Image (cartoon, rainbow, N blue to C red; front, top):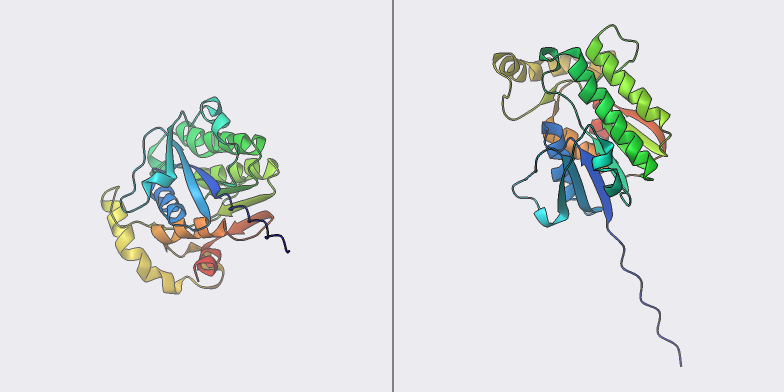
Length: 234
């Protein structure tokens, strides 16, 4: 008599953790992760709770932490398959350089270090087009510096997302942003060749691209700009 075949163990849903979830891009990353068939649960680290209408809240763990102090969250990182960092100040030109560095570089790098110590294999970081630690532009230099810090951690896989203009559905910062949101899409067709990385991308598309990329196999360091986002989405 043939013995019955052993039952297959149910696959354990993968977990993702994100810092910066309450920002425009972070919110869209979480939304995409919550609707993913790949990630079963999402941990959002931040100073305030996150709610996303229309998304399965039972798969979201909101942890209120001090984003500047890894001791408040590091013990909760183990067991996650992927980490996302979308920390960044909304209007960097209107804050002191020290504050920009504290958020965009120091806090993001500390999160990466904590993730690496806890064995998370894949780290995705939101930076900016042209990120370069030797740039004469302070914002771009900060983005390049944080990339270097994450690269130095030696993650099995690190993904750097470098968008240019991120198109949000609402104007959050006044007249200048209103003009930019209205005019920039008209410029996109003229940004060709070496200027293609400067094309705009909708915030929901960027968030979805970051989430989908974590479902794909990969290793080492990858840098993704507009063409990379479109390749993932298409």
